[in-house]
Length: 109
Image (cartoon, rainbow, N blue to C red):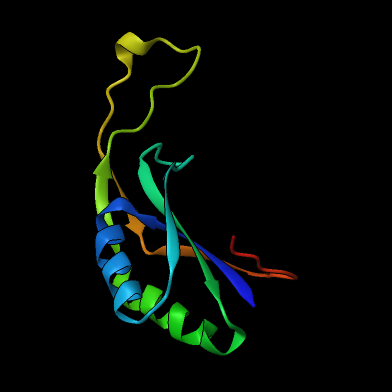
């Protein structure tokens, strides 16, 4: 058995949850915050039998797409903020960051 932890952008979370349910995967959905963009994302914890791991990864891949987004950079620390003019920067966001972890035991009470 494996534990798949998938960190996805909030925009993709409802579509992914529906696809997981449609394919009989049970998951726990957690609201999380990313460290780089400091924006909301969603982390899914999915317990999966070894033979179904690839199917689950394909569902995640199909439902979580990366996209470009404009963001204002953070002002420099310790500098003169009066002369700092932030210009929006285009960054790639979305997709999914996925961890597949081995599980020694599983109990459901």
